[in-house]
Length: 356
Image (cartoon, rainbow, N blue to C red; front, side, top):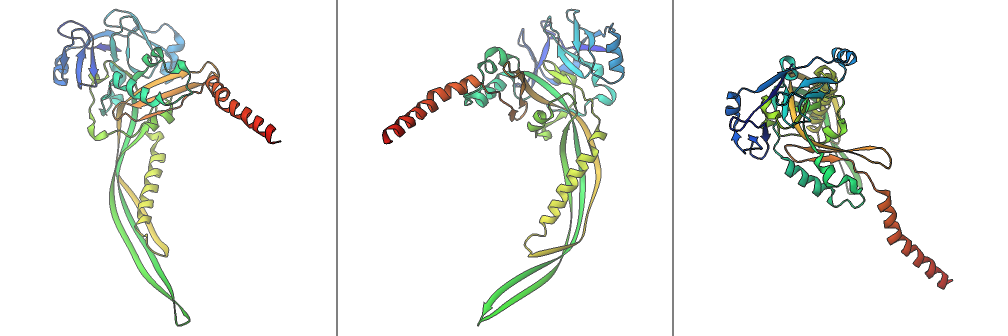
């Protein structure tokens, strides 16, 4: 399997994709290149070294996430990855590499949403998010922890279709009033007929089993109208994961969601009646399309030493939407009790003593 690395033609440094400029940047000589210039470059490549661990081989063949070895095209060091990793860094020379064969054929993404939020902005958003949280452990919010934040392209399946609805019902409106000591009731009956078509776009499902699904789903949605055709260069400087879940695993769930949404919209068209009796309510789904996309997420993990639990933080790399779960420092909570509630409790006891 080829391991690709894009090199600056001016100084030979590794190129990375810059979210702030939306160009490809050399961090050594600060040269910038656009996508057309990048396509004209011939990336350096190295050939995969065969893994000596037979269990790793068997795991890969069976579709399991075993470790796999690659050779860095810059320094020749071994790069160890999971079976789903599609872009990474060399741990020795820090050169960004793309494992190209992982994203070819049926696994080639249809499109990618490039990072628009760079590391500096991501750290700023994280600082604002956590800034007012008083009881977070200091270790969760320090320089070393923040530097561990990673920009990762996660794999998603994106679904679209056309929905046609047909609705027939009978609705009644009832009016009641009193006059001259008499109570009157008026009932008007209407035939209700509704037909309509609706285009559904960008229903998104994460396609990586090992991902924290709650977290990566909570940073949705993306502005997918800003997507671009996939090019491996967008992965340079970031991590990337390939999918290990196929669209068939989501078909039933997504279709049920679409039908439920469409039926709710049809029912809403019959609002304003006292009673409604539905005679026919049908939904037809057509022009279904599935697309495979890589979408940007900044992530960070923290293992609390107190309870051993792992906490996650995620940030949409395009829109800046955040999601996460914060650890609580019980020592800080205890100090709050000592400094606020304990004196108050003592004052209440003293007040009760004198009143008694």
